[in-house]
Amino acid sequence: MIRVATRSDIPSIVEIENISFDVPWSSRVFRSYANYPGFIVMESDGVILGYAVLVVIKRAAHLASIATHSKYRRMGVATALLEGCVILAKENSYFLIRLEVREKNRNAQEFYLSNGFEVKGKIPDYYPDDNAIVMELDLER
Image (tube, rainbow, N blue to C red; front, side, top):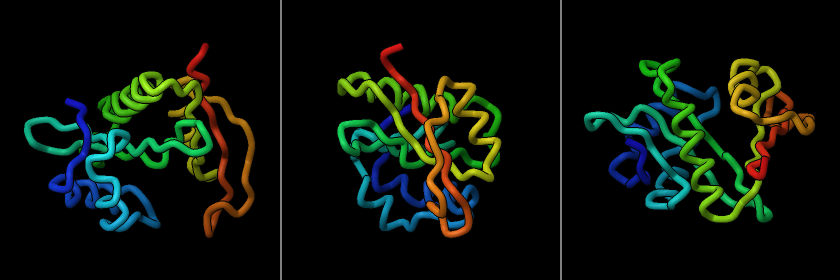
């Protein structure tokens, strides 16, 4: 089940974050998004399998973060969360989802490409140790 994340989900989300990223967001960042409609989790039998944060920047939906617990990767969790983000964006009349992904993270880039995103550019030194690839999904197609 996909639903809006609550404060009680934060410990599980932080665990996923710490497993997934070299420079993880703090629990404080996640607490600031609690109960925000674009902060969603996928839950099964009371266990948080993954999360996504979709925010609005300059009239476009921006996928700020998405991650799946390592135990549940390659099981469709991220795809379901991404589909949830697409639904949220469309329901709120956004016709574009934009994101940045590490240039070194080819697996993530392939995931986004396989879900209809297109490469739109590169931002040098976006991350402390890497460039960012800018990708977009046109929801009007």
